Length: 407
Image (cartoon, rainbow, N blue to C red; front, side):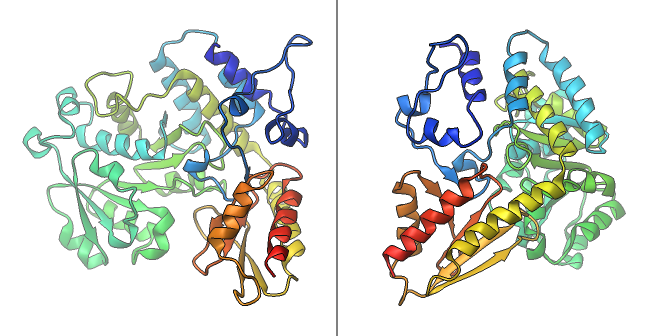
């Protein structure tokens, strides 16, 4: 079966209540000419699908694309284009939307960080581009990136991939001592902003004082929608963000946005150019167009209305279970990453005789299957911003059923 037919099939999946029948119970759905059954690859391959009450986790396939995004992918798959022209024209449109000098679609926020830093290191020098990630100093490149200790959580590997050495700091004085002729950039991990001693504004000020590029990762930090341009307006040299989370573009996409010279150099470090560190970070034209349409839709959305829907859904779940003896619930909104209403549920093990791991496994094994995440207090957290209409009622009912079984 041709790839475009598969994409079209997924794009026609119903988004309302009939989705549960189609996916969870395997009912045949139809598209195209009457009597022609659509191929259900998820059922055919025996893959578990589930209600995502956890959030936009990559391992859980993050978010679902809007119909307009699927349509863009399908329609652009029918024509040949020169990839660099697609990058140029889509990048220019995206840059306008996010208040940046330049922008490019990347294969995720991780790739955006690698390519952005590569652009800073090499500029447009093709010999330096071929050299990465080896022998930076011997090739005339800077080789160190400064980062706060509290911002190390694994994603710094994207920077290591260019061959640089990371220099950990904690205080302003540490930064002043760390800066030297080898310093290529100062990187800020926004989701861990509260774990560092220097905030984003001060970090940028320090970088500007010494003429060093300031870069920032905001991978999962929308909503609010204003974060799409906040750090560009502040003056960060590049900003990296995921495309397949709240924006609901293709999961394999991200955005690199920032100073025009850095974007230009990052492009040279990436596919379709050969002998580059980013040759394997390929983004096809369909994904580029799909990311653009997803971003355009996200920027234009009524975000206040969307927030109200989330509040109604999280309250439904909370009201269904909060009065169960032994249960304690609280609705919170994480301050930075995954900034959406989140229900934290904990329980008295003397009254609710189940561990959070066993509770989560029961949800996973049920019909329909449901995914949530554990919290640090021994309970579970659930979000609703990846739920479709009506799924909050299913989640609430299943929570209540499983809790009452073990009281």
